[in-house]
Image (cartoon, rainbow, N blue to C red):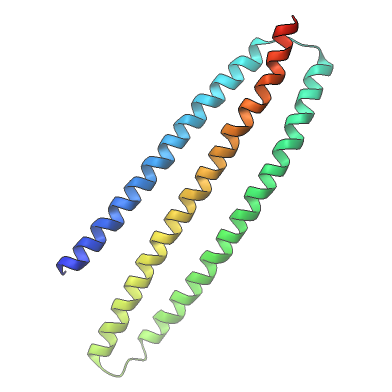
Length: 154
């Protein structure tokens, strides 16, 4: 393995570690915000009509956000499928090499393309997860003022 390959592998590992750390931090923030929201929500009292109104408002808002995230996830799946098919085609093409050195070059290109696809997929998944967490974190505070109005009126 050459120094250049080691450097590329190290960069790939560093990027994956950074992405994992960001996802972990977003997950922890989501858990903290969710726990705080549920604690505030359950600490309040209200009439069944208020609860129903609040639930309907939250449900209608969350459905739109969930639909948008699902569309993004479907695009991600479609993109990953196309990339996988391209890699499969490239793998089949490696068997058509005329010489050993030509075959080695094609295998190396396949590995590089595979690692690039892995990096791109990991980044895309991290971004998608972050968007989900961000949407949830943005959604929770929007529901809190409704609860704050109730406690202020009481």
